[in-house]
Image (cartoon, rainbow, N blue to C red; front, side):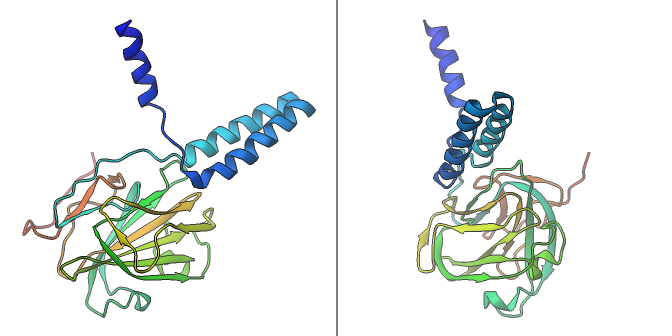
Length: 237
C-alpha cells in the first residue's frame, strides 16, 4: 500500500499545472481534436499532439525563490545570451549611467512565465510597438515589440525588466500594472511562443552568472546587490 502511495505521489509531483492564460488555447485544441475524431480520426491525433504541446508550453511550475534582501533572481527561464554594460534605453527613464544588462533567451521549449526579480513597486510600465526580429539578436532590444517595467525597491534602487517579442512570439502579456506591488519571484507576465527578457541592474552592480548559463525563473540568483563579490568567471565544459 505504501509503495502504491509513493508511486502515486511521484506521478502527482511530476504533473505541472497549466497557467490560466493557456486555458482558451487548450479548449480550442480539444474542440478541434474532437471534431476531427468525428470527421477523420488520423488527423485528430495530430490535433491531440498539438494540444499536448500547448499544455506543455503554458506549464507553470512552482518555484522556490530566495527572499534575502539584495538578491536579484532571474525573471525568466532560458539561456543567458548576453551580459553587457551599456546605457539603458531612454524609455526606461533611468538616466545615462551605464548599467549591466543581462539578456535571457527563451526557446519555444522553455517555461514562459515571467517573474519579478526583486520585491518592490512597479513605478513604470510602458508598451513599445516594434518589429518581430529574432529575439536572440542584439538589436532586438531596441527594435522589437516590447513591454518595459521598472521596479523600485523600498530603498529607492531601481531594476528594469523588458519583455521582448521575437520571431515567433507575437503576444506579450503582463499581469501586474503600474503602481502594483510585487514580491520577488511573483508572476508578472508571459510571452507567447519564444522570446527574450532583458534585466537592467542598478549602476555599479555586477552579475554572478555567465553567458551560456541556463537560468531558472524565480530561482537562479543573477546578482547580489549587498555583496562586494566581484563578477564570477566561468567556462563552458
